[in-house]
Length: 583
Image 1 (cartoon, rainbow, N blue to C red):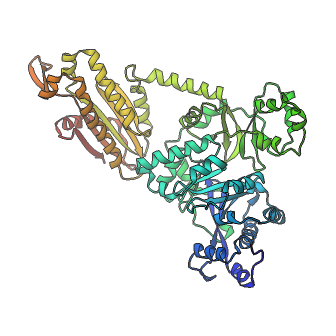
Image 2 (cartoon, rainbow, N blue to C red; image 1 turned 135 degrees about the vertical axis):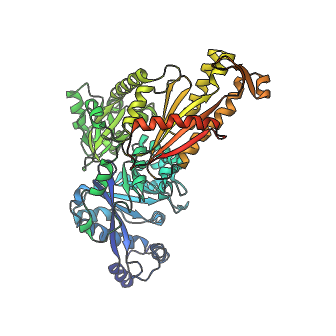
Image 3 (cartoon, rainbow, N blue to C red; image 1 turned 90 degrees about the vertical axis):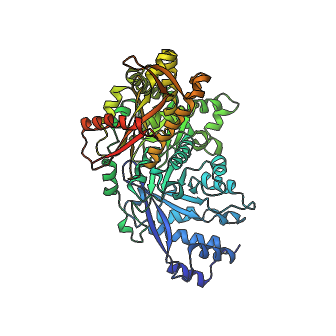
């Protein structure tokens, strides 16, 4: 490995410049970090950043070049106002990991030179480029983590080894690739994938950045899903002028404040948050032992870094494992023993912002049977701890409210919840849908009330299973149902299509509730409401749908009138659906 750069490369480095792009807290619009991005590559004689690094690598000077580039990035980072309170994301070329004998301590020396804390630095590992077998990436990642550097996996989901890295090294951050986020508000498959990736990451105590956000709709959808941070052109394009990096971005704050779906979540969670004393990750184990002796009822201790970001929790049982083992006490009191440092004794813990939706917090807790609770943050800094007992209490309260308002047969929300939903739709784009089972009375008269209830349960289950989570699903009573969904963009077709699929699914599945004779005949014979004997088609569902756009004046009486009148048209329509837009 060549350890010095020629004058040619030093001259090229003088031409190159660093641009920064902000990464914001998705709940507050305040800055969390900046990513360093290389600029003036063309002026240095290269077609692209990739060709520049390919050339550096082929000439065998990748490591010294990267060290000089780090120095350039670190120095410029200190020009940002308030830099000591934010992170710098710096991209590492994966091929650095192939270098066998690079010298340690260069980054630490640079940080000392510019008075930057290790907690301010996060190294990004791109998942776009496959890492060769010659490179033991796990060893390298662990080296950086043992040196107390934050590690992020960039472009997560589109590369070769993302989940393997997630399993073997547990990075502190993942950045979900733009591919999954482009148009996510109208793509149900992308929503499901990103939600699952986010939930999995948070279970490991990993923070999630939605990368490449360009629209208001993408931002709000990622916030709903549970991402922690956002980055992209909606916020700011990369800038070489450090004066353009702001502490908070008013235009993003306005979007978040105008999101009418956000309830007063703070007041619901706050009473249960335990402001447990956090410990800096560098605290001596002996000091923790002393604290436990003085506070014997404490079982969980939050661990933070110098930026007050939660890293995990230390459980008293981990300490006790040492106390009850031979020489355990002497090990714990030995500050030079690596394996008894707090970072190695703590366990990952899910983290959520104080403004997170309660359902998101409950889901995070429920998905992990070993969870002791959730760390709560405010603007990315530790605020308190929501214990398992507190979350269970919240769940019970939510269940009691839900039980009072739900339909006893289908367990779907009832009329009180529907009225509340309609009163809160404010100025969102939304779809409102009234659903009615056709020929239900005739079926009920012929097959009995028990089978009638089974049919109603069938349709309720179809709504629960086939409509995505963002749909509000309710049971008005009898054979009448109501569903609604709020959407961000003008394209309502994916949501209408989801409703149509439920209608088709019911028409097919309900045939199993008829006798073979009635199925083959395609109708039943029964009496109508006037007592006349008639032929009735097999059960189906009619849907009356209204699409309400954001600028439309909301009049619930008019909405109910339109939904009711459209129901008759839907029953006669071959597709069993009638759709209109409220002007």
